[in-house]
Image (cartoon, rainbow, N blue to C red; front, side):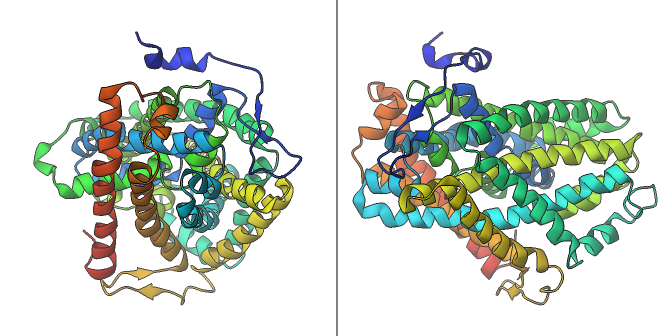
Length: 488
């Protein structure tokens, strides 16, 4: 077995003393503290990748696009396009040792402006992500105290959710709790904050997910959902399935969000990038599949209309359909609470990585102390997050209607701009810059494939041709079928 094919368990067993690497771009008198070990990096990066996209978007897409055939397409794309982009971003970060602005400026001074465009992605995402994290926090509390209107066989979960998000103050309170928890971790730094919390939350996440999966699979009727998830129906295969699976790669693997470049800059030089990226991909894909095995079989087992319930996406699936299912489960109140704790952990690790991507740039380029940078980011989160939160209540009249007829709330506008426009553009330009406008030996040397002809040729073909075309397809589809024509 080759060194770079070391098993997941073997690699995770590697521990090393804390390491500190200096960065020229860091504030004078400070050192840039990286992850203390390989497991710290992998768990933090996997924690970033494992987020709300796995829990409320992946199961919905699996259900919408044919079950097993979507899963098959996603796995193939994850180990080709997704893995290559993940390796590319980590390599850019570790090679330069800088945040996203400094990284692209070092690769090619002409592209320093591109770093600012990249930074816009987490700045837009993290405020509304914290709003949704606040909703999750509220539901943990609701299941814990046994809120009337949410629990019980006849509960109207739709009315409960709508009355909550339309309330002017409750969503703001829980949004502040979640945002404060995120900042509290980041302010402690990479090793004492991000790495330490990742080593706690990721194992806890795995235990909770496996417990819920086993519990759900033991329920009568759940096996129908398992068959739907794993048995491909090739008659349902189409370009829509491929495009949906490609789009999910962004959400699932934290691509084009500055995160992996930032985390890569903290990565030890002794760690193997491809092995680490492989482990991150395995963790992320495994969690997405486990999440689908919790949600889809439970709906098949306890919903009168499984297909109708699974056709609900995002908030509707998470906060309306699933609580209704939990109400029919034995011990559903406690199962619901455990589920939302699981979602909270997943959302928190992702929001931490988004904040760190911004904080790293502020510290490096503005020569700020970490707590000052965190305070600035917290202020931005409060302003933009408050707008998103009130967009379902006081500011519900503020919306944009596209020519396609699709109406976007404030939160929806932020989500669409970041995920359907900016992220594909960032991914395309990252590939073009890496493939055509920098020394072609730099990144392959960092990855460790410079002298491996087959892998080097594959890497170059992927980032120069295949990945940009795939990302362009997502961008064009996102514009045409959301702004111009009705969605697919």
